[in-house]
Every structure is written in structure tokens, then in C-alpha cells.
Length: 126
Image (cartoon, rainbow, N blue to C red; front, side, top):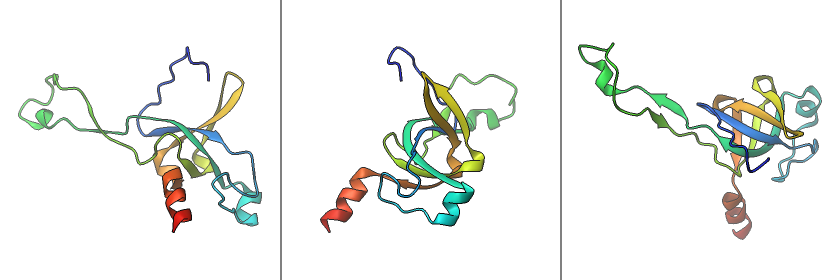
């Protein structure tokens, strides 16, 4: 991605660089042949994450909910982090192209599994 561009992911969405390897993922995860052929599941590296799920402002729950709140919106953060390997449902994904690179935008709810490098390192050391 061009460092001059600032890409902002909104809400509970995650930007993923797709993994083109079909037989085995970069994280060493083998996908069953049936899953692969129907393309119901895909994997990739999480590039950016949105701020999360917006939380309601408790001040607006009073007697006058129509009044504007002065408090900034709070978010419940997502589980996905930049650098994670994500396995997600393909039907919920939206493909985009940025600077001739393919990316996929996926809602957090469509992610089935996250693999973090530090977890993989810990498993190898055991």
C-alpha cells in the first residue's frame, strides 16, 4: 500500500491480504479438499482493523435522549489484530483493489479463526 494514503477501516470490519496458497495456509493450517473446492473458507493476513463495535453513550439514556452528547464515541475493540492470520467465511467477504493489490474486507463476525505468530512460537517451543 502507498504510505501516502491513509486507509480507514470502519466499525467491525477487517482488511485482509488474501492468501493465494490453496492447499496449505502460511500459518501451516491444512484446509480440507472439500472446503477448498467450494471456496466457502479463505485465509489471509490481517492488514488493518476497524475501531470495533460502537458502545452507546450512557448519558443519552436519561430524560432527554434527543440532546447531543459531548462525549466521543467509545468502541469495544475487535479480537483481530494487524499481522494475525485469519480464516474467514468467503460469502461475507468483499474484494477490493488498492494500488493493484487485492484485499478483502470482512466483518469480524465472519472470521472463524485467528492465528498469531507469538502463539505459534509458543507451541513450537513446547
